[in-house]
Amino acid sequence: MIDSGAHGADLLAYSKPPEGHVSHSRLERVLRSGRFAVTAELNPPDSADAADVFEAAQPLGEVADAINATDASGANCHMSSIGICALLTRAGYSPVYQISCRDRNRIAIQGDVLGAAALGVSNVLCLTGDGVGVGDQPGAKPVFDFDSLTLLRTIRTMRDKGVFLSGRKITRPPLLFLGAAENPCIQPYEWRPDRLIKKIEAGAEFIQTNYIFDIPLFEKFMARVRDEGADKRVFIIAGVGPLASAKAARWMRSNVPGIHIPDHVIARMEGAANQSEEGKKICIELMQQLREIEGVAGVHIMAYRREHLVSSIILESGVLSGRRSAKRR
Image (cartoon, rainbow, N blue to C red):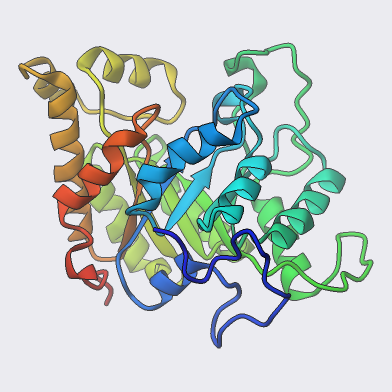
């Protein structure tokens, strides 16, 4: 969806956010209103052509409240997240600026945060980042000056206290809605809710999870989250995505850090006459189940190089029908 409150090509003057909000983010407005949110991931092009970004964003913008611009995910080089965010804000979309701590030190990151906010970016997802060894340039020098927790604390300090880490004053603090990632479905399971709470305490206001393919395991995570009252302190957006084939699912499970795909999901894919269509059906069913779990505030669609499927998946799932309220106690 084009953001009616987005800055677009002509950036708005610096102004105070609405009452009870920390930013001008459409995503924040949707979540704080209690509506079920939808975000989607834009896979960055290996290109210097803005048209490639707009082509990928168009089907996502039809249905998503915000579009994530990934930051060299998997430690692979693509167009930068801040560059994509600049293009998306010019076109009227609401982007989520992903920051990986792997590649830049605290000086560069704080400067990029101010630059992104000045461009009209209102959402930031704070990530530690995969190690360079898993990417396409393993000889790169890793930085990791921050991890996701210290990054969250730093941006919150810049926003709420109006100072850099050095203590030097920021004349116009960045008005940003802060997010982090979580992976509920990998070991050690019992630590995952505790890790989530640490991110909330560091400043996270929304959470986007990794792919959820195991609903019972995720429900156990959410039960613990509710027991701790964490669902009242952060908006949890559950990650989903359409599997292309059983072979692709097996490869993801074996090669992508943090991916858990149960055997029964792969067996269902293998037994399908059209595995790509079956992957889409599974994604739709998962979204419908996640929508009914108390404390889940939305879904995050990750469709690698398959953005063209996102609109139909969301519409067929019905999660936006009447824009029903998220299930919250």
